[in-house]
Amino acid sequence: MGMTPNEAAAALSDIERTTERGHVLRGYRAGGPILMLWGLIWAAGYVAMGFLPQDRWGLMWLVLDLVGIAGTLLLSRGSRAEKQPMNWRMIVAFVALLLFFFATFSLFRASAVEPYLAFPGLVTGLVYIGMGLWKMPRYLWIGAILM
Image (tube, rainbow, N blue to C red; front, side, top):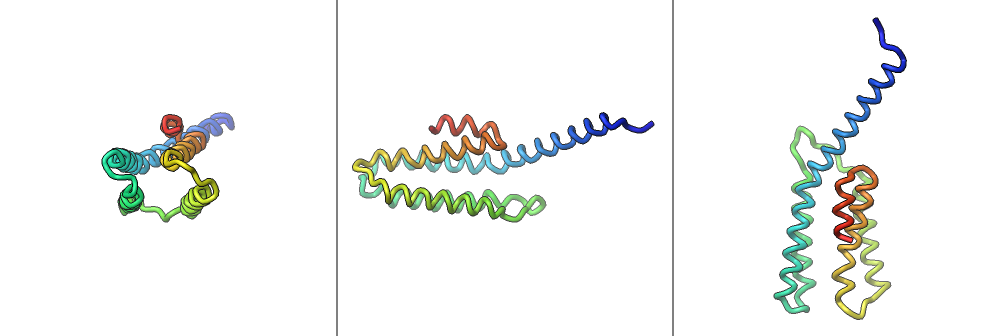
């Protein structure tokens, strides 16, 4: 006895949903450690700002950002069995985000330090909200908290 067209369509739909769920869970597995790393880096940076003079903040954030980038690269390598080539869209998005930061900071010079401190968190929250709306709903809440 064969499948009816409706049964076949339902089976294909189930397979597609399962595959999509697997992709989302793999994304959470890859992104979770990176999210935690950057959370620790930001916490350390903001705590250090309470103890360091303001003229040292830039150097401190540069060091922490370099540690975060190196850690992100190490964590995103994954195991050899599941290694996939770097998606060019991710690279373009990262470069575009950096250019956006530099352009915004150069165009809208703040008279106080607070906007410089708040802006990266706001943009990061916006990125997480976008990821949450696009594919990973748990990130929507993280972005909302950051905003």
